[in-house]
Image (cartoon, rainbow, N blue to C red; front, side):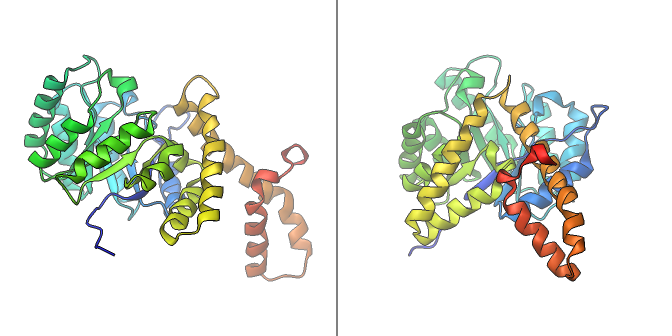
Length: 312
């Protein structure tokens, strides 16, 4: 098997950004979330993506979060530096590179829907400003323009430090077209899909992974899917893919997907606390040592989806 030269592969999480009751960044909660992702086998984290609510943060908050987050985890980090002012984007990118982030990521300008010619000029300029590796975040539903396969291949050939794309388009063939176009010019370029349920189709089409919201909620499931794909475990792969598809209906709940994902993360934490609270007295009555107690609690948490919350 040929050596994989790609750096951004597998299951990546566009992390939520926790806030406290006063609307301030909750760094302690973010560190706990990063620990959960690391333990689950997540391959890397995108900081301040769409689910990370970058549009709700001041420039000073974004810079401080870039500095703080790097101390919280050993996972590879990408910082979303998208904005409407290139000077701000450059400042954020410089902060990320100085902290040892693997890369930065940038949307097209998301107020004026850009033409293909404008998009090329825009990323030409960014490519000259970014001093490290960078990726494009393609999200036409939010920007009003599409960074298509032809333009991505052209930019990939022009900029060696342009290392990948997150393609958030609800069409697997759109992402597949990027995979095929870029394969003609680069061996080290990564194509990540932005929709959870396209993770496995993207891998099967020659893509490299996923960077999607449900990795905040069920990161273990994406690790299972990744492992099953790489080891050729077809039944496990199908089961994981079906479960990802089932859970993708979460995006139809509530007013916006950011609130829904954050509520799901918070709800799972609450549910785990209720499980432990409910069953610990019963476990304590058993003649077991501390190791066995922790083992029993972990086994109960595995049954979390089936726990009768109404009885807690």
